[in-house]
Length: 161
Image (cartoon, rainbow, N blue to C red):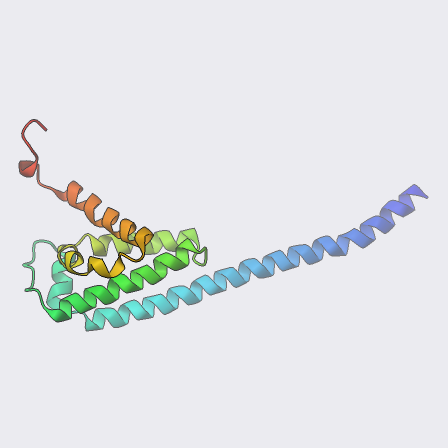
């Protein structure tokens, strides 16, 4: 009778285990799908911003050997829009809506963009817009200032270093 009882218990618990596994797989697939949709949406928004950004400013930001364009309202506005987009992605990541893997992918590009000379220059003028979001403000400042120190020429270091 004990083996019949064990088979009966397994017959009752088995479907529960299979059902729980199916729910877990469905949730994982849904999370991956949502991450893919977010990636597509934010990539599209970024592409729109690139079309708005003055070409000479964007190229100067990517290549520090190019001359910086003069400051203008267009460059400042586009920089503000880009950093606002970064803030949106940052807050979604902080809330757990964006996977760590996807965030790392975006963060490399965010760092590369923000450490360019145009964004460094423009951040000084627009940073006050983000002071109400202290975590994000610190995050951006850390990215911008850490790269500045690394990129600093040796001749600008104080004597004795």
